[in-house]
Length: 343
Ligand SMILES: O=C(O)CCC(=O)N[C@@H](CCC(=O)O)C(=O)O
Ligand SMILES: [Zn+2]
Image (cartoon, rainbow, N blue to C red; front, side, top):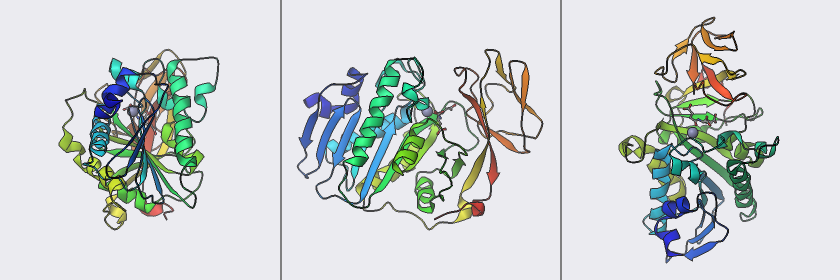
């Protein structure tokens, strides 16, 4: 019992595929802590608000900066150094992948949501864990106090490559719903001035929460993948502070919306690897947001060239080693912030 709350991340890593049992603790300040599983912590303040906030990390186990941030916020909540004003759910999604220091153990968890964990014949622990995580998120949103709720989910990541735009967020496909100014301002408070608009559904965690639960949900890329201890926490201080304010204040401190402060990009192409002989047409050091012009070859897939379809088409998340059928490259083009339908 004590270890759970003394070192939540450490205990989670000891129970890397899950823990069948539950722990509760009421803090002196009245906040209720409930552990639903390893890596799954519900925090309920004494007096509730209309917000439900999910903060997740370690969907990819080698993306350590978000894990360090969540670890520290969680420990500060437990030790009552971090106030909590809103119902919050913390998720350390894939502890086994943390333990092996890799993006995933058998299968990329961020392609397993919205039911993808149960498609096809494959069964593996990441699929089972993704299914359970979906259930925890559903339970969290469904067990909220009655009345109109405001739902949020920030799924925290870091990117494999350097990036010309260091921090950026993926705004999951909204199915035509307007984008949210306050959320862009919150991301800006996190140091994220760049947003990529998905143009179609995906099987990512953030799309799951956005689509199934109408949450304001984002994949947030806070910097570059580094091993534990190598992250310069100052580079993440704005984000950590914004998340601490989000859960600890009635509202986080946000500046008024100014379109010129935001760099918005729309998805141009999602290039899925179709063949074993798949090659990217640029070297491994090419940073995210490097631009290519219309007609330039981006990749060669089974001998077929894949070209940029716009001038100034920026590459994101290039990875030639993904499993067949999965995204090997995303490309985006800049769009004026003023062109978005915003509420
Ligand atoms: O740097 C990379 O190649 C991957 C970083 C990462 O894990 N990104 C997420 C983005 C999810 C989304 O598109 O919303 C992923 O690939 O799962
Ligand atoms: Zn990631």
